[in-house]
Length: 415
Image (cartoon, rainbow, N blue to C red; front, side, top):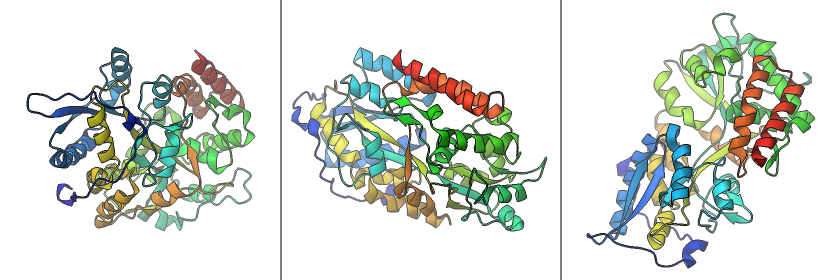
């Protein structure tokens, strides 16, 4: 990966925050240190490689990569922001950035046409863009080649239909299920890989503005019912008693050869490459009445409005928004980069391992379903999730459960 980092010129990146001048201070060695915080230890290695190249071009600026594990990230960050000790640049997701943007904690930036459109849309709020896209993922269908071949199933040609009229997926799922030994599909309370994709591919919605509206949408209810039935009625997917308490259960079943179809994102590529002892491939995600509709989610890097090193921070933002800055992430096979010019390096990494990741690219440029956003969306999800889990367990009816979950979520975001 390190050898693949080219000495490319930093792409022009106009930042609206550039009008804020000064504030930089240098240490005894004449360097200004910009702090950069993230939660992924593997991607942190790629950033260190990237920032070494950055410092070669900007010897007066050093970037200190700070790793805060996911388990502590979202408790430490609000405390540091409140105390004015947050990193100059830090990772965020769609569930959390809105609160900081609305409270003037971030520097707004200008868009760049070289960034992934679906990700910039996620981080645009009140007419302004607040983050530089860093990573993104969409959803496709991993499959066990031996199992689908034996069952005579083409994973690239599967359609689900809640009316049953055009449903080719359920008959295939029944063929791929061997009671007590093998499941067909990873239906579970997995919002990104399963729930929202089914909702989107049925023409449903999950939010209206910052408010949740999933209980008000018949097509959303219909999609959730279909997924829940795969578990509790058709038994072609594992019990929610197992998957609710272990988010990696279906991944484990797939890599063990006990699950034929695993709908998920590129974030599981390395897990499957390392864990599967059989031939596997990637097909487009399931098609629904509204077509193939994938959730596209992304991580962005945002800049603290309270940074004491504004000029240097802006230079770092320019770098991580460029092809040269993003290439170590792509070339190491960690994730699709937010800079489109760096994406071929990610594709090439997996191509050399015999894996075609094109279905993920196709999903990202097709019809997509947005991950929920808003300043209090995380609180809404926390309130709704236990009720949604009950629906998947079959302990609550879909219509009644969605109503209770929506009410709880919308109450939480107003507190």
